Length: 260
Image (cartoon, rainbow, N blue to C red; front, side):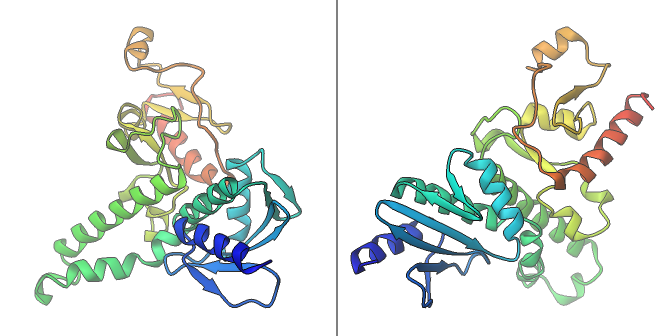
């Protein structure tokens, strides 16, 4: 690659989540970020860009990118972008996923909590209600941001992309999780609009193993229509990692609706 090609790739990387230039002996531009652990190497051949990602969650990252860009050509584990615009979209989505995939939220969670707790006297912190409330507030904020990143800022069912009406819904409730890793796992829930969130949170709707919507028999057909529920509704996608949490939610749905 010539210097101009390198400069253009570096600029695109900087604008879309990969601001650090990494040393590499290959004929490629290698980039990283201080905000996540994913690295990417980009080689240009004619008008095509070969894009290789590497990280501790490389397998999951690749699977999610394949799902997000089914029309982008691939060669083994390399994406072939046919324009700078397509390259930019790949980088932006990869950077967002890198900040949300398991269990990236949990990595910086303790540091965020400790920073919040610094404003309180030491006598009010360890093992107290203050610490519990801070951990919950910080964790829920971090979980919501991770869900926005993972779902691309759009409802997991309807695709509505209006952040003010979107909620990060836990499949296994916060209080029933056995660890912060479970509470902050981006696969333990879905980004839903307010209507669906309220129903999902109260186990009045759930999703089957294929992601199809299941509605409580206690909600009449006219009420379903008023709520905007439709039998054709389904999750825009469902990863294998969602399954254990959804199994928990379906079991609670069945019990709550006397269907066991």
